[in-house]
Image 1 (tube, rainbow, N blue to C red):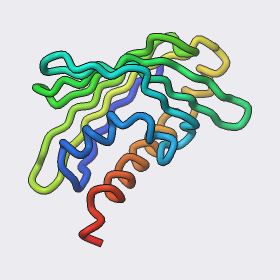
Image 2 (cartoon, rainbow, N blue to C red; image 1 turned 60 degrees about the vertical axis):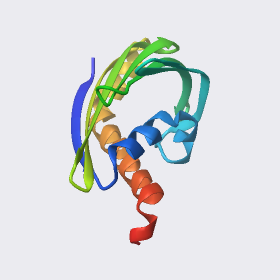
Image 3 (tube, rainbow, N blue to C red; image 1 turned 120 degrees about the vertical axis):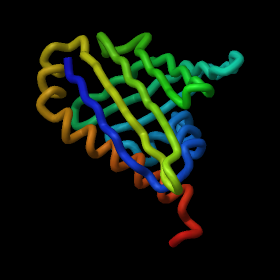
Length: 151
């Protein structure tokens, strides 16, 4: 199962980063290989927000949609994502956010396995490259959205 951890400092507030990560329907505008994002439900439950959403990922001949449960914990400044349907056998990713001066730091952890063994092998080989591209896309998007006045 591919696992990875990434820590990155991004020049915007943690609140803005959290809003951006939770804006799943905008992912196709900036996340590599993301074709569609759809939120089915979004419910506030005290200190948490629970979202059920689909992401359609594609490249070349591959195009798959998977459904996730996204839980944002306001008290811990964290987002936890698990799969609840689609081609993914197992998905768990965690985002942790904290302000550090005029920047924010994100800690991102991911652990996943596809149901299709052949695609899973292919994903393992290109996983690190893909993760860096996606992290850079989030950083670039944050800069575009929240640092316009500094340009």
